[in-house]
Image (cartoon, rainbow, N blue to C red; front, side, top):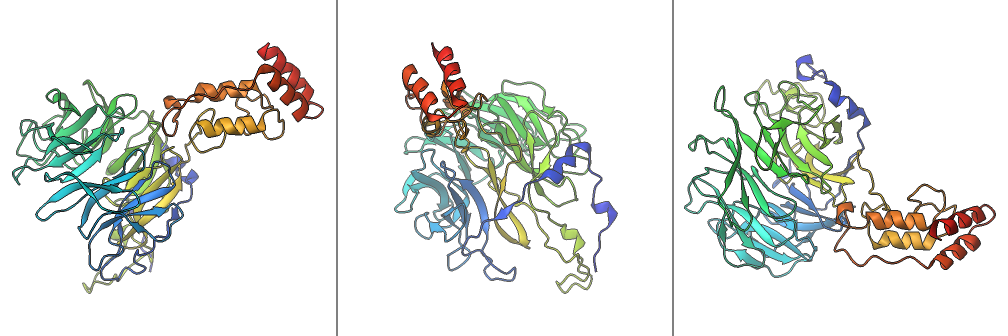
Length: 494
């Protein structure tokens, strides 16, 4: 019997009408993930992130342990047998991340009564301790130099922030009990690796709600500065996920307007009034769980129950505001399965999987170039969380990206050089002239650099062939109509 009460499905607001344009999500087949919801122990994924090259996933889950112990693994984008990289048999907590150069993996693991922070070669091996302090959650600065972590020094609230060089060394205190308690998801690091922004229970220290935003230098050179605090009446706000955008705004989820209605807000890093995204507003009764800003700062991926109450699906929206597009596969509500007799088996069911995006700070990840999103969800078996990949429907390749990998780098110069003079292979036709010529080199050169999302460090920009060589290449490499382009080129570079 199929039960679909009308009150469980919302009439969609205008901004959600683009959901029909969603890309198709693909399940990543990872060996070891349970093939039945009745498996014991249940083998599942808890966290996901991308390698800097975008060719591997780093996951945390209990895939190969004898019991319910989580390890960190790498796995190809296409799936396959996971490679365990965390050292030993200690339980890995929360998430794991590659260093920016891809050479190491950093993770927190059980060290007895609490977790310590470790780094290990990306292929696995012997781990090195980063700090022996109690770690409840951590993140790496984008430059890979520092680990910022939450700790509970005395074993009691509040949780405070500290930083430590990734190579080990002295620990720096970033926040204290003066600012209040910090939740494991209510803080983020600026893209330039200089600032940590966090939400804390400042107005009402005894509350579980993080009601105020602060910023503090990663190196602890100054005390935390209050950015913004929410109203205590008619309700005390609660700040959840926090991130810093590329344009220097603090993005955070909070119930600013309606109690327990969590929406995405932006506030200037230097302080000011929090604003919603333009043309974007969650409908009444909807909530947002988690969000991640793309590496290029142009998009936001988030989980929310926009369409069906308590069914959290994945959406993307431009960071400038506008229409949200659903990108996860359809999921269904747990409320539709009703156990009337109390025997643990639904007596009334829609016959579909009860699915959700995992409510975790590491359940959504962007590929390095922003073209793909990985997410963790129980989309096929209820309670069995696995990894899914989906293309970003809003993605636009940077100008000068001639090989379509999302970066403007030396590989694109190679495409231009190898197709120079062509009027048929137009992969490197950056200026739209319908011929590969010096103008396309200039387009690539203008885009080559950090602002265009170059992969890795910026090397010396290759110089094009001489003007005479360019003219000859265009003249002899193209038949008939190619002469017109050669003459045009000679005039352009004369």
